[in-house]
Image (cartoon, one colour):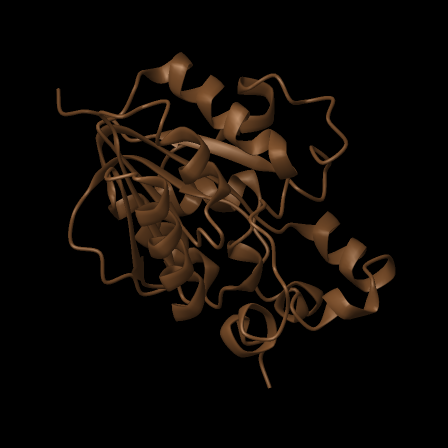
Length: 217
């Protein structure tokens, strides 16, 4: 059976409010990116999980509305409760998942980290993400590639292999060329853009990139 994030992780483990790639560095990285490209009015975090980035950045950008989406109802409800307790009125959460998002609006910045590893039909998921980016906005994401597959097959701890089963089978791997073929835009390195190129998590098996959606002429 496919790994079930609700049943096998959020409802079954004592999860913490962290980020699964880059840990506590991730809010600072996105803040660096925002300061580089301009403060967005709206941010969507797709596959937000415990939403560390949203909760860290929402107080720093009180005029920006943050929307977190995750497929696990329990983590969405926990996030809503945490936002209410923290008095953060500019953070919102809903249940939704790739590759078929029900989101019917666009955002200035769409952020999707540590999520495409677990998604079927990754090209369609990528197109869905890009469709939610407003013209002139940015899509930031990381993705599995052939180096990720090698890591899963040869080095990943046993307890992670079930979750990364699609990667191990090579079903949802991407590359710069594949991303460009789907989006019509050549991706650029997010790790380089935020000055994280030398961090231990910014490896060949964990590439992170961004693309800008052109604004109308």
